[in-house]
Image (cartoon, rainbow, N blue to C red; front, side, top):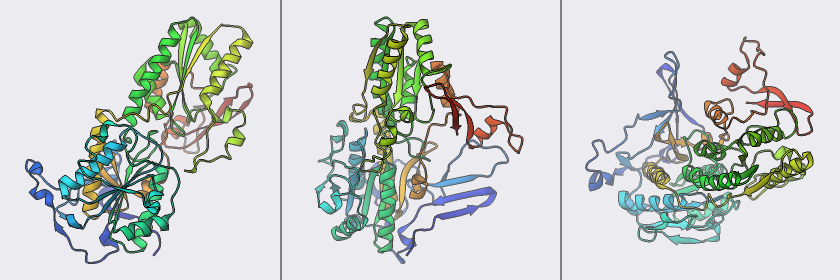
Length: 491
């Protein structure tokens, strides 16, 4: 049995449904059961208990009048028939990868959703990430044992990177009689969940494998946002406010704040927009240079002469190509396979100090603040708590309805089920030709650091901005820190 073929359903007017797998796809003649929600007093006030079988959610909501209807995903929610009896379910929950606000909330709502909505009493917590499956570390989870955990940061199950041995994991699932697996993690974890689903399917096991997307960097595609992101942006404000106070309290004060964002600069961008005290935001998607006309040093000097102080926010993945010894760092990987980053915050702070000491144009005072791990270790805020509840309950509804091999996520404000391959196919990045980045530039008044010729026309007569809007990459000129000209790419 090979890899699962994508379930794609076409309809009139360009309608496309990218459906998720179902247990009945590979296990014939599965019995169905009465959904216990019909007898749940909490749902008695709901006019329509169940999601209609044809309910789907469009990936794009902004279209032209003659546009095709486009790609849709299956709408999440309870179904009239379920494929598991309550006393048959043996569920397992695992958290993998880095910490993120809201992990405990998702755990709590999975346990309480299974118990209160579907009468499931056997839920296991797998300790220590993926390796916990075959290390046989488990704890029993009940509504009483998870009652107050949403008020705490981190994860009560513990987490780890790596440790993914597919055969050992599925052997453990099979040996323990687990038939619902809820996997909470980022893009690497979701790739692992996809491989687990494929092995479960190959063995013909009646087991739903469900992913819940977790990444503080907000770099998972398709979904509107990942849980914990709002909390991270809110917590980042504390560091930015502190940097602003330090900077404006002295003559020519500079506050530098490093935020999380390995490959995607969403936290830095949104924290900058929310703060309005930031003068320059540097992210991985937007190359920058230090010296020369239009460079960072020139901008800092202008800003200090104008305002007497400034605040710089830099994402941890920004400027890595400028760091000395970056070639060595490219060879180092962590347990999740991510490139080990050098500390760009310390590096850029020292370079700014060295520049002004060398040029003797201004006497500066620079304060560097690194709240990187503080913002991910806090409990989730009210907005994220609600979002975590929706994600968890949607995941439970889908698993009970027999769906498998999917991630529960928000698309255009609606809860959906998204096939694993769409979640893992690429990384979500800040689009520097998008309006949101333009809003940031207009807020900070920082230079773009890149010059893309907008007069060039392609073979279809489109200029550069049109090509960028169509998703193409363009070449432009970039001046590095030594003033030399090179080619840069804008996408």
